[in-house]
Image 1 (cartoon, rainbow, N blue to C red):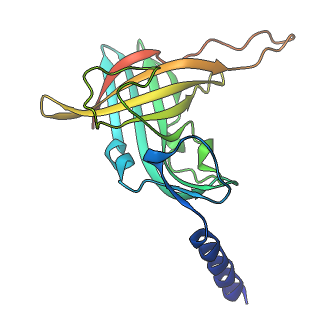
Image 2 (tube, one colour; image 1 turned 90 degrees about the horizontal axis):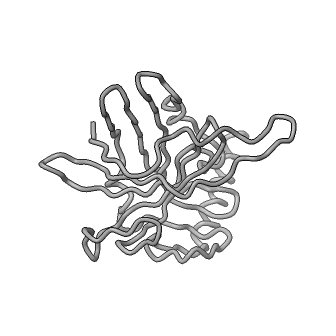
Length: 200
């Protein structure tokens, strides 16, 4: 009986999805249609998957990106990149969320890094004169677990001197709540600005 119930639910889900519109994430204009599927038709997100590391002396910033397909967030389906990070500053570990990368949430947008917005060379928060006309960059959000603030994480994947690297920019910090008893939230504790991370 349990197997029959599961099979019926799967068939209903497939039927609902088949009747939903499919939108290529490259063409996504930000409007949201309930039960639509925002799909990575051209596999643009695949290039960003992997583990990347920035080091400078005894400071390092590691990011892991993983692609998730056909994820339902309560309103619509989507393909997206999720991620986790570790930040060490002057030999002291500030935060380490790498163990959360395999956590399965009902809504994968709960991951500390998540997103699927594709931006071009003229994206206003990080213009890229050296980007090609057809080059696709990724815009995600990143949450700082220390301050509970969010920022934009913009990612460019390139090959530099024969090595795969990502150039990132962490910018546009927002969020955090003020509490009269506890005072304002702590400052954003992750690195801000541009850096280059090498694929491991």
